[in-house]
Image (cartoon, rainbow, N blue to C red; front, side, top):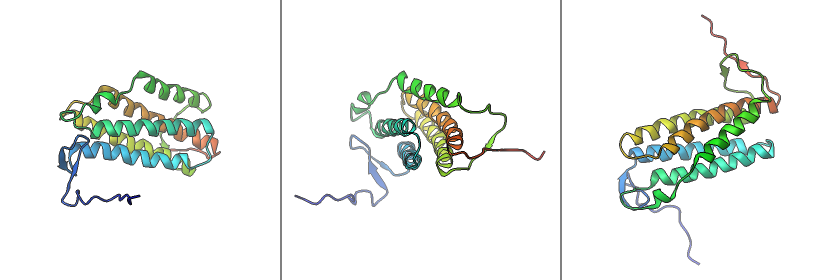
Length: 186
């Protein structure tokens, strides 16, 4: 059996291939978009590494799967490949996030202030995921100004960042950490 290698050396000169074979600069808007989605996915794995409720980790695992699909969608040059048309989602994925947020919010005290990120590491990683998700959303919106991006991708990322905010609050509560409200000194 031949040894498999991770490195190909084809990117050593600052270029890489999209799915479909088109070569682009490594700072291309597509790479910024799907690279940030990949960064988000890695951060989400840190949340899942804690002994959270099984239902929470199952939803997070499902989200990670969705993000891999979104990353592949963003990395595919639709002028060369029809893969993008087959990488699709539907309203049910956004509804899932909304349903999960509603369930978590039923157990939380009303939000009266901004909250300082921190507390238990799982909650902190949810805050990090929220901010990386917002950046991914900005990168995908930038990409949408240059090429077609399905609206479900942008809507999903927008709702996902909300999900991670609610999850951060839920995990703070689950791990019995007090949220620290932001009190501006005006």
